[in-house]
Amino acid sequence: QVQLVESGGGLVQPGGSLRLSCAASGSIFSPNAMGWYRQAPGKQRELVATITNGYRTNYADSVKGRFTISRDNAKKTVDLQMNSLKPEDTAVYYCNYFYNMHYWGKGTLVTVSS
Image 1 (spheres, rainbow, N blue to C red):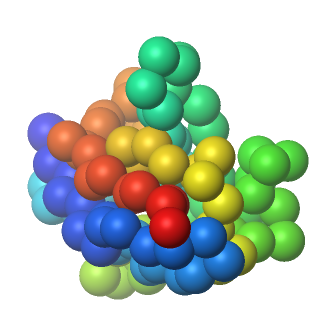
Image 2: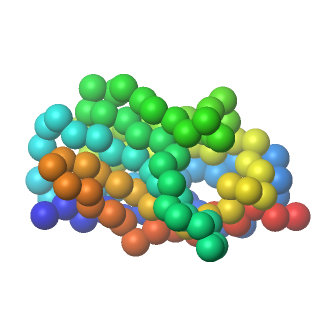
């Protein structure tokens, strides 16, 4: 069983930056992918960015050039650096681990507002 705990959400002004972190506990198997998804009010959960244990990354078009995902395999962590934040980035952000099935964190709220 894998447990994921997110941290780093909060309120930020448009154009600002935030860094989300996620720590995994339990057995991590390879190959796998870790990543971030988000869900805005009234919308479906959507992919933000993923990264494989081999460090291959994938980003949603809406965040390319603004967000950067990284991971530390030894520490079992995955981070999301978010720059140039926009009001439409407001959402609950969920950490995800995928190995045969999806595991989810409880989410952390990011609010972009002036």
